[in-house]
Image (cartoon, rainbow, N blue to C red; front, side, top):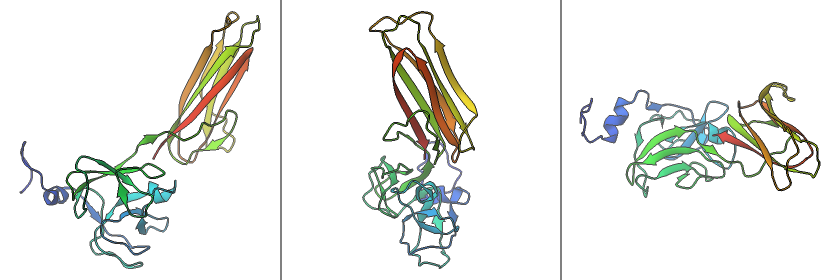
Length: 241
């Protein structure tokens, strides 16, 4: 079917791919590849199989799907399809999201160790290519007053919960967020400080929280101070990958 289309027209993969500018791009291969291997651009600018069991360029640099059998060191003829609808798959579940797998070059409806969505199945053989960033939870909490370096862009969410220690004096509770390019970050980007006017009754509690963004490669930390309280903390870094 020629394009442009009219409302209600059926869209064909070949037409859509032809209408998408730069749907294909040639790369040199760093390893042997087969048709529809999910590929990334490695630090040398060559393509190789993507894999989701590494939290680095092997997942971050997803570019698309290989379109022809390729030997290492040979410039591909058909190149890599980087957008549009890619055919030639089998057994896809229409409507399902697909992610990079821990198996090099493979995709699955279940994310690998690290999450990277790469497409949505539009039929049992065709995948609409996406390179979508997704937010996911880290598996463990982080500690206060400790510096971390962000491997990806992300958001820090810190929550501090305090219960009175029995003192008759009013408590205080403060939490601060710092991030910048220095290994010991000093740029304060978030703060929540509370000085309570009177003692907290037994059985009551207080809480403060902060949220702040962190750039990939920058350092960050959450510090806190408190008096006349017993505290528990929850500090999470939500990565964009």
